[in-house]
Each structure stands twice: as structure tokens, then as C-alpha cells.
Length: 568
Image: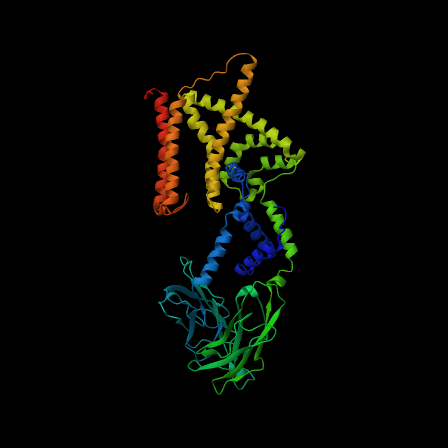
């Protein structure tokens, strides 16, 4: 894929990425989009075989492996799933206040629906301008929400007689346990505890108002959070409510956002700056920017008034406007997609790739990569002599590749025979063990990659059957045809002794039938998960052991017959 041509599909995927990762830069969005498109693309069996060969010869970029490993996508799915079915915990306020006479400060931690599970979390204090053991006592502990419990109160002790100044502040940080992957921490995971001196202000009566008058939110952010503060007020025991409501302007209530008519925001204890959340709906349609208002109406406390900043204007920015640089992202995606491919256009690029470990990405190359590169270096240089596919439409590359394959096959065959001779193996056993194993390993790993990446098992199993078909029909048929034609020109018969071929083929057919029956059983029986691949861990391991035993049985019986321990 040289360029992403389907604008609608690109926009949909890009908006999905923006929803899951709203803070990604265009470059990061392009990398993830290229990985997503590459993963969704249908790949041939040759592609999987090429991937294996490049991995085994340390010729693949580690950065491409990262894109193709789907780690970012898996993490995105985890976060998305956690936000949908998991639980979110955070502080009830962004800022908590303390006064000179305070001996401790109480912070509330809330969790949003659902609340039917037990959640453990950890909190700890951090220095700011206020220092531990000078202004407050350091604290770090793990607390647990019980099932059905929505609010947890924690207390931080303050140093008696400490000298507080305006602006002195320390922090309390909230985090989940490392083993918790099902829940998430909310936006307010760090609370500020701040010294407030109301005597130094000109405000004679407590005032509640918005921190700022305008908020901008993208459709994919799901919520808009407007912060409300209570200035000139501090009472560690008193509680009061602030009433608010939403007002539609150009945005439509309950279509673009969830309307609120009788909202209540409760200030209690030391809470100084709280927040109002309004649900934003993403309809996935291309729209203009829309606005609505949040109004603070009244306070339940007689001594608390509504300040001048009593209205906050919320502007909903459509994702399509946020992604006005769609063409730039398309170009970046095309660039990264090309980076993830392995086609070289010139002979020079061929040679550079052959002589470079990890496809030139030396920084991310490991010791294993270097060892594999050294071992495969001669073969990579020989392959680099094949002309690139851009010359003569790829036909020159095709025929030269056939010549090189024949040359390498002859060398490997002779080397295998010499090795077998040195260790005392007959050619028949060498052929079904060393040669067969060496030529089948790429197929094995290619099937593994296909099983991990493809939506179906077709390529994983079809890769093996396809390679065997080429070996039998072309690998045997073509040499035999050439040999038959050659000997017929000399008026002599072409004779090949059967040897132990009949017994070996009979054993192979018997094990093949058992293998096919196993695949049929895996598809039909619920015990195996009704699928050729995957399924429950126990039956999956059992199937693998059966296939390994079949292979070992074939090798053992063929070897015994070759050395005349079995007479047929």
C-alpha cells in the first residue's frame, strides 16, 4: 500500500485512534495508523515466510517489530476496556485548603460506577513549598475500597506550630497497584494541599465561581470537566451545596452533550477547588464547532454567594476539525508504511541491507542479532547480487533468483551429505532429518506468525501444505522431467531405484491421516474449542504433543527400516 486512498476509512480509524489516545502527536498517530493498516492488510504466505527469514538473519528493523507487535494496540484496547467496564478512582477535589489552626487535613477519594468490586490503591505525600516534618508528616499507605463503597477518606497530619506562608503547598499522589490492569486512575490523581489565608484578601464574603470562563473539549474525550473554586472560605466542619445547570447554545442537548437541569456540587471540609463533569457524545459525524453553557445558580449556604464567573462556555471541537492536518497525516502514514516494508529499489540498497545488521538500526540491535547477522552474512551477500525487482518488471530478478536458489540448494545438499557421512548417517536419513528440518524451519515460524496475525487459520496451515506441494510437484517433477528428457536423447531409460521410498511414504501417509483426523476433531469438538488453532490450554498442548509424536514416529520407523531393523 503506497498511499491510503479510502478517505472515509482513514478518517474512521484515525478518529478511533484519537479517541483512545487523545494526546498523541501527528507523528505518533501516523505510526499507530500505519501499524493498524499493516495489521489489517491481507498478507500472502510469501510475506510471512519473508518475515521469518528476515528475523532469523537479523534483517528486520526493531522499530518495525514494535509497530507490528500490536503492543500499542493491545494497550489501547486495555485502556478502552477498562474505561468501559472498569472502575475509575480519583480525588474529589483538585485543591484542598488548610488554615493556621489546622492540625490535619482530610482528603476524599471517590470512585465512579460501577462499584461492585474491591479495589486497592496507594497514596503518598510529596514535598512542594511545604516540606515534610516541617509543615506536614509524611505518609504512604495502601487503602482498599470495599464492594459498594464509593468514598474513602484519608487524613494527613500537620506539624503543630508550623509557620505557614501564603502559597505553601504540598501534594498527595494517588496510584493503583502495579498488578491492577482492570481499573484506571482518573484525571485528578494528584491533589494539592494549600495554605489559604483569607485575612489577606479583600473578599469579605465567600464566593463560589468557575476557575475560568471557557473550556474547549474534543468530541472523543467523552467528558468535559469545568473547575469551580470557593474563594474566601474555610471551614473544616461545614458543608454546603452549589446548584448548577446546562444551557444549549449551538450544541443540542442530549445529542451533543448530556443536559443537566438540577446539578448539585457539594463542598465539604477542606475542599477548595472542585469540578463539574458533563458527558460529551461523539456521533462520528463531520460537524462544525458547537457550544453550550454551564451556569452556577445558587448556594445552599446563606453566607456563600455566586461570584462574577458564574457561567462557563463549553466549546465542542469536532474531531475532523482537530484533524485538519489529515493530508499531512496521510503523507506521514504513507511514509511510515513504506518504512515498514522491505522493498529495495536499487542494487545499492540491496547491498546496504545485506551488510547491515538489523536493517541498519544498529542502536536497537542485540547480541543475538549480531551473531545471526555474522552467521548469515555470506548468504545475504549472495542474495544481494540478485537484481532488484524494479528492473524489467521483476522478470530479471525472478530468473536470477531461480539460478541462485538452484546453486544454494546444490551446495546445501552436498554439505548435508558430507555431514551425514561424517557422523555415519545414510543419505535417506540425512534427507528426512537434517535437510528436511532445515528447509522446514522457515515454514514452521511463518505459520507461527500467520497464526498470531491472521484472522483465520488459513495461512498458518496453508503455508505448510503449499510448501509441500511445491516440494513434491515442482521440486521432484521438474528435475525428473529434465532428467527424463536428457536420457531420452541418448536413447537410454531413466531409472531411479525405489530403495526404502515405499515404506517411508506409507508411514508418512499413515501419520498424515492421523493429523487430518486431529484437525477435523479440533474443528468439530467443543473440547478443542471448535477451531484448528488456539482453544483451551490443555487440549492445545495435547494436540501439539500428538503432532510431535507423529513426527518422531515417522523419523524413528524410517530410520529403523533404513538400517534393516525392520524388514518390509
